[in-house]
Length: 487
Image 1: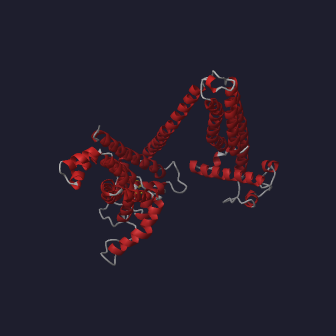
Image 2 (image 1 turned 135 degrees about the vertical axis):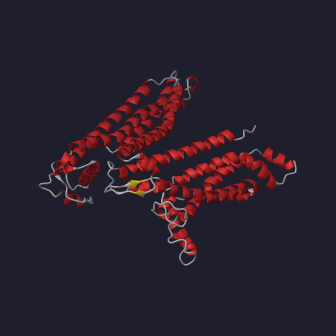
Image 3 (image 1 turned 45 degrees about the horizontal axis):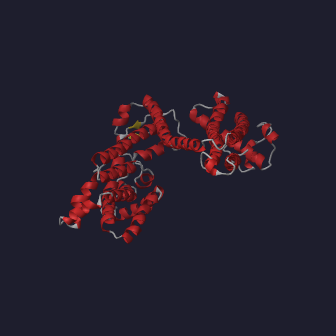
């Protein structure tokens, strides 16, 4: 049974359980809700949650674990002589999944029967041509061990789906029966439902923490593997970035971090003044009508995908800068991809981050402080300069640091606007690259994760993670330590 249909059946059982559980509670109280321990709805919610939580929990866990277990079981059956390393095994497994999906599609379209798919052989059938007829394209002829693995994959997948269907339906029906039978007027349904909802809220909050831990552990393990293959001193202090998958790579991180920080500094030089002045205008000078129009329009910039900013840098800003600073003018800029191009566009992207956070912080300064300053004879501009801004300064600094961490982690604008050259230079009109751009390039294609040239991406990511985490922690520390507490 498809997972979607199984989900619909479980939801239908939960809905039926809600109404039957509520009706049973009312019947036990002779139709008078005053005799119930809890409101009637709680009895229905208790039945519905008892159906949904175990069934959906097992279903989600099954859908996550089943593909991994089946992949491990099938990959162990592939002969070791068929592949040289882990990367080659991954390519074989992708072919296995493609053939298995193709056989399922052929059965669904009536091109072959399930028995024929199970008995299929490379000696009697051209698998590539057969699957091409149902719209599945394969890059090469199917080897016998690939077909055998694909048939095992289909068989195990079918067994897994059948077992999941039986277990999930059994849990749903069993949960319904358990909750329905214990429903009566004295049952503390409200307490049970509230504890269940609390447990789900705790679980939801834990997902973010566990995800962060998982990300960090995956980076740490692969970074450790990288430093087993490449000296950490050359990585952190090397001045040359020249990866070569054929060997002899130089993987010094300093040129990448120089490009990262150079572009980020230019971006902040654009975003901070513009965003801060916009925040001061919107919070102190703009009328309610202007603010209601200007603030949403300014925040529209935050919703634009970064790939659009990258195209804007490549097609508009870069050529415009070449016209001004290019060979026909000053001769400083040889191409549209340069540090200045990416920095300017990234600064535009960061304006909403600085302006929105700064606006909220400035608005949080109590009006009594403004009134007191004006009452002492200060002008509006003096009040802003000498009262409002000092009070809001810690929060504004935190907002700037958060924008800086966002700039350091940007990828698409850099890839399209700054180029791919890893160099140490003070010239903003030259092409450079950043850490994030090189992470993408090192993991693009059929990377062999046993080589330092591929594992270096995890070391770069771990270093960048530590730096951005440090900036965020520092920003929060500044806000909490120096923020004025107003009564």
